[in-house]
Image (cartoon, rainbow, N blue to C red; front, side):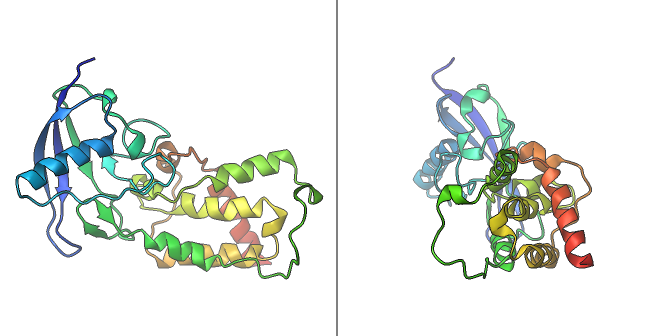
Length: 250
C-alpha cells in the first residue's frame, strides 16, 4: 500500500441558500491510506487557506461514527460506498491513487443548503418535538427489573433507537422521504410500555409534522435501509403505518 495518494475531488460549492451552486475540482496530492474522509477534507481546506481561498464548509462533530453530523453524498451514495459506516469512518484505503471522488450535500427540499456541504436538518428536530413527551405523573423512578419487557421487544426497540438522525435516509430516497427516521423514533417507543401513555398522540403528531416539513412519501424503494449507518430495517416503517392507522381509526 502506497504511503501517499494523489486524489482528485469534485466538491459542490454554494455560497449560501439562494446562491447558484457548482462543482469545483481540486487535487489533494498529500493524501494517505490511513486518513479518514473528513481528514482528507481537512487537508484540502489547509491547501485552500494557504492559497488564500475560501475553505469548504462541512458538518462534523464526534468523528467516531456516533453522531452522524458528518453526512455528505460521496460518489452518489449517502455516507459513501462502505455499508453501515458514517462518512467520518470512511477511510482512504478504500480508494486508489489517482481516483476522482465526487462530494455533494444531502439533496432534499426539507434540507435546504446553508453553505457548500452543510444543510439545515432542523426539520428532524421539529418532528421529534412534535412527538412530545410522556405526560403521566410516574412518581419516583422504578427499579430496572420491576417492569418486565420481553427480550425480543427490548432488542427490537433498541435497534430502532439506534437511529442517529443523520439524514442519510432522506438523501438516498428518490422521494426524499423521512419515513425511516420518523418510524424509528415512533417504533422504538411503541415497543416499550413506557411509551404507551402518549402512543396515539405521538404517532399522529410526528407523521403529520413530517408531511408538513415537505418530506416525500415512502414508496418502499428501501434505499434508506441500504445507506443507514446503523442498518435500521424498513420494518420500522411498516410498524409506523400500523400505529398511525390504529391511532386515527380509534
